[in-house]
Amino acid sequence: MRQTITVECVSPGLDPGAIEAVVTLPTFRRPEHLLATLASLTAQRGAPNFAVIVMENDAEGRAGLEAARPLFADGTIAGLLLVAHERGNCSAYNAGWQTALERFPAMRHLLVIDDDEIAGEDWIARMVETAARLGVDIVGGPQVPRFEPGARIFTENHPVFRPHYTASGAVPILYSSGNVLLARHVLDTMGAPFLDTAFNFIGGGDADFYSRCRERGFRFGWCAEAPVFETVPARRTEFSWLNARALRNGAISAIIERRRLGGARGAARRIAKSLALLAASPWRSLRLGVDTGSATIGLYHCQVAVGRLMAEFGQVNEQYRQPERN
Image (cartoon, rainbow, N blue to C red):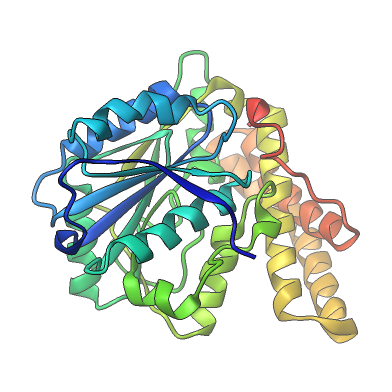
């Protein structure tokens, strides 16, 4: 069923037929940082003609929408503001991606940045160039953490903050939507709704989408030279948040595998894999802890393995259900 989407503002003089790239930007109760994200987009150099779609996902408060409205209303930013009335990050992405396809017929690439991130000044140009050079359909880039005051800085070495790849080139798959470029034909082929809204409050809808894209034969690349800089609140460096994120990561991997390996035989294979990972996790965690000098970081592999098993019994942490704790 199509969700309710309300377009609140379209920048004056916007020529949809001239737009080659669209940047989609979901927002939820972070108006100040949203403005910083938008400022980084207005500073782009060497990019093709692009528009920005901001997807407000707080249909009641609308703080981000109202903060950004003057920039779109006076044409400082080309694009539009919309409200995705269905709560959840997957719903917000779906609203923006669907609107981009409908509104911009000449769009060749769709990019995603989140409202807690700042783009480098050549972010769009580098992502587009990498897609063409590698001949891939989907390109990801690093999300570099910038820790707020009071954060435990040693956690920068934690796997949840480290990029999955370090060098540009073709890669087997991506995992995050916080810094990504999608060719238009990927969205045309996959069809709406693109992200499964069952992941709205768990996270992992992007990883599930990429898994399905890989099954359809789409190719992935990585652009190490196109980082975005993610603001990390101090609470995300506390043990409770890191533990919840690691358990969630394990649960997501199990859920995605369950969709591919259904039935009794599939369940047996998944549980066997989870038990094997659990058995190996103490040694992997010990090595990680020694390498990073942190027992907190070292626990990651054990937590992921436990999270996988918990998911098999229906225990999944909805980390996005309470945004003030995320």
